[in-house]
Image 1 (tube, rainbow, N blue to C red):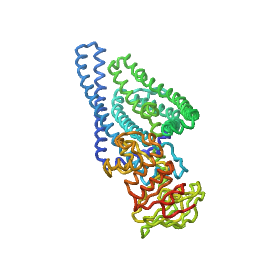
Image 2 (tube, rainbow, N blue to C red):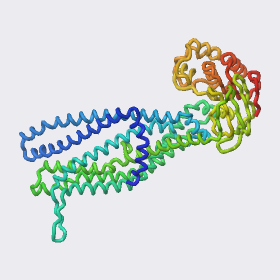
Image 3 (cartoon, rainbow, N blue to C red):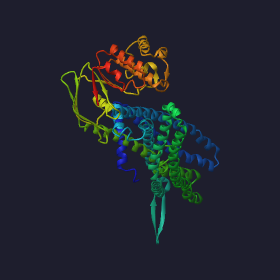
Image 4 (cartoon, one colour):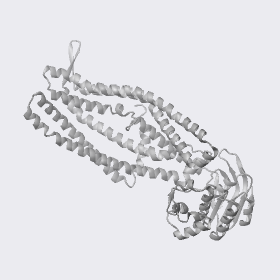
Length: 570
């Protein structure tokens, strides 16, 4: 039981309490009460059913057809009650599960996307996320966490109810066992209950002993599976580039290497699981025969009928299985288990901790941001550096007035993009001060635009949720941007990030700018994939549709100087 410690239970509570104290708490608690009540009724009926089994099997021993058919007519009634409770209990469990999962997903995605945490988690690790596959943790781990907690909680509750109910039955059926001690005999009341307790404790001890390594192995297995899936997904994303480089052999080798990690860890998982299966299977097989071996002497002596033996055997199995719930559910590759729950809880708490650490690091940033009294963006003694501390820019003083247009030029690696990100508020590694207008809301256009899944219309208006204009206006803008081939495809749904060329995607990004008309616009080599004519056309349209916008651009073509009033050479 060492792994089922306070820290584990604390983590479960920390992951769960938000939902149970949320606005949905009363409905959730009502559902939980209904499920518990149904399970209580279910176990109570099982006790009556256990007593019915005694009378039913006694009629067989007595060869009494009249009594046999009398007791047989009660069987459909019990079955209807059991099935009714099982179906409705499972339905309520599933309803509670999806509501709980929806809340946790919303909470995690809100934290992950809020304050650009997802982005800074990459930035603060040099472009690599500090945890593996956050998408899997949100989609799969949350689903498994909610399912496992509900299933195991109901299982524990069911076990407690059965222990309380069937222990009384088994105690009364056990009678008294006299153990010879020297010349005297020591009476042991309810000896079958004590045997069930001792047997269950022994099973729990050996289960935890052999099953402890499964927790870390299962954690690694989820990580390796996610890495393998992520690598394959990148093949779709960069298929054209891979084909151009003839990189199929290298990709196949990398995929095989990632799968090799899955294979090797799974082999270790198989070995440990086989060791645990020896314990659990042996435990279950012996527990099935054990009550019969104990009760048969009473049959032979005439103290008990066959029905009493069946009642005793079922009661013993119910008590022993309830006591040994940990044995039967410590690890299972197909069902909820404590080992898998621990792995999932660790992944989710680790994810939450890294998000919290990222937010805390942002709060400790030495870059001060203040509100400027005028419509001016001003950098004062600004020093920009990489996450490892390497300085890119030192003591820069820069003032950009509203409506001005600034072109930033310089050789690669001089920190142009990093400076632009710092001014826009998406680079935390800097010292100094940036004073911005009160209504400063920068619109940042990167070199590689993002096009969401969905219709072309949705991709164009992103990140706006509602249509800011008519379809006819969108078509006019498409024609103006040289995208006449897309005029009739506004409703088409595709993976536009793959079906459109980078140049077409960059023109879509400019189209977004024309729709948004931002007050502050930052262009990070936003025309790098366009030829000279299309590049100048986009900047010419920028003067038409965003004549009042403040524009800060990064570009390598000096021909764009004529579209800007100022130039900052780094």
